[in-house]
Length: 196
Image 1: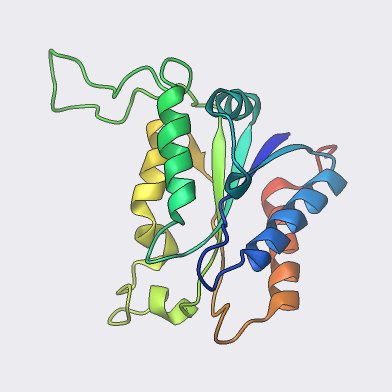
Image 2: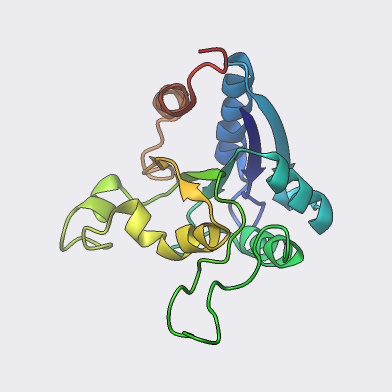
């Protein structure tokens, strides 16, 4: 399988992006060991929009790695998506899916990447309970409900989601070794050996 790894972490204020870089590299090493072909982009190092469109077209799967900042992605990853997805007009998506005959229906159905998948791997200082428990901060919506707009941006291109991986409590109660092992297991479960 051809997999594009996008590291959306960035250096900003007190964040150095080290843990997300670690997880990005775990994914790279694990997937290569499983026999998959990998390309990568580190958003904080800059990118060429047209090259990124080609990488997305090349990939069967995109794995996004990023920290949850203010209930979403770091701003450079959002800018990456705005710039690269827009540059991909006619290649990543044809239109917004609607027709003038019925302009209220089929919004978001104009994507061209129907055979592609995407996966989120994200880190949060929030504990898992903040996502899972009704009455807690995210009111039981779970991580995927919290990230609805991120999912919809990728689904607008026609891609379908793979199971999200989330690491919690990364500042107040970090458990890096446990997270790394859990991520390797997740990658094995989702992708398995390329030769299987």
